[in-house]
Image 1: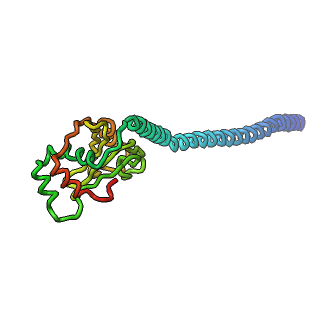
Image 2 (image 1 turned 180 degrees about the vertical axis):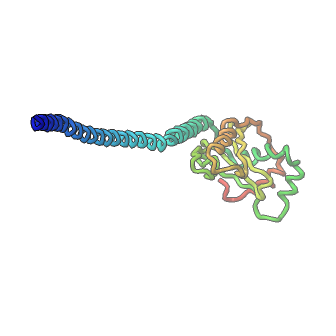
Length: 237
């Protein structure tokens, strides 16, 4: 009787242990598989995240490097177009070939407002230098004297400059329209402004080349004219 009970107890314990053991093994396997899947998923997600971040950085670098160039190119093209347009305007000015006497009359017409005939005579009679007046045909020459290579505008045909030594006595750049009129371009004798600043230089050049003054030609008396001819450089013309 006691032996039977003992056997039953042993049998029940064995069955209980056998039935409980199997679920524990299955649960452990599932946990390991789930852990493996999570690691795989995290690695895949991490890889996609890194790839996305890399893709975001590249376009930003590209867009930053290409912002300034188009604007600079456009401004340069616009200025070049304006310079070419100015030359078209300047080429419309027509003038006649001027004689030495007409060129000296043009100089006299402009400077007589600053110097009297007596002052001009005294200056020309001084023996400090050999020649004091110079007439140059500047047709086709740069309107800035080449001080800024980007300003390519040149004087129209039959344009002359009368310069003096010393330069303090002034200079005159003109075209002879007819026997009674001249077209005067107020070209400075010195280019003190910023010649390396093309935009600023162009504004100055455009000002004196598109707004010439039409002036009635005045002639010096014979004595002063002869004195001017004596002081005219022989290489003029």
